[in-house]
Length: 369
Ligand code: SAH
Ligand code: SF4
Image (cartoon, helix red, strand yellow):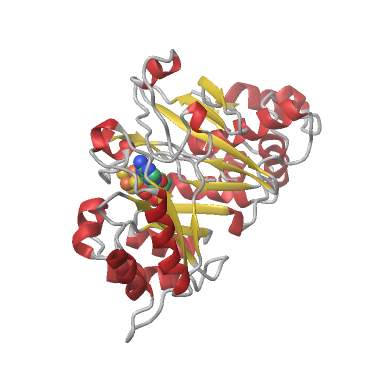
């Protein structure tokens, strides 16, 4: 069995190279070939000794994920579906903007948190992705986009862990993938340009702050525990008080001086003026510590089984206005890639997705413009 080198961050690759009797600087060269230059063929790694190249050919490979499908949107958004075996598929979305290119990356096949407005949650949990499967999404997208554009410089400037899955419930695979994204010999992304989005796994937020503090987005979706218990079931374990305290503590390590709160706007569920007032009190309590934050309101993308509806645009605007008037920076997320079914929130990456490839079953996934 060969070792998939995509499974290693630089420290891991150094350790592996040492087991092969190779020095540290060889690992750095190899890491640069793989991630910086996007090369998969050891024969092309011309500054490595022939003896090392043949050793690599015998014992290692750079194994990307098989592509099931690709859809290109009129607005430039690209969605790939990758096969992760046993009937499971995951999706990755590239969102080009004038000043940046963002890749939305999946961390699990399915998700165990079970938020009722998310079809990944409705589908249940299949399994964690490995580090290789997480980083392969970036490796493949970056390499493909560079080739297509005929450029050598980086195309993807930002990564958001906002695809399928709860990244902080796959912590041990996530961290080496993040480190590879940040490594100057890897993708060289700055910490502010790599965002982990979480439904609020409190102990893992704390660990992330110690191990690899990148930008943090927290999926709030409700201004009180009773409602959040329903919308984000993990809240029953880690209630709002605890979550917000952890967010404030995270800022001591974070590359930004605020937390982004995501808030999915659900008609008649969490979108009233009273909910907005409660939110303001939650993050700016009259007698407690404020939580430095920005809000990102996401219009809900409905899927049939949810029984939920998107808040009307006027409601979203009025809600945003209340937060803004209270001095909280609030944006409304644009939906991108609708025409290729790549808008926020409706992924069910199981075998049934393959029917979608042939156009028989409509399906969308979340993206973040
Ligand atoms: N599990 C992580 C990251 C993936 S979800 C998390 O929950 O944060 C990324 C974002 O998409 C989350 O804010 C999530 O709440 C939102 N989302 C999920 N389903 C959605 C839907 N149907 N419409 C709009 N946003 C949705
Ligand atoms: Fe999981 Fe996030 Fe979907 Fe909730 S919103 S079910 S945490 S992927």
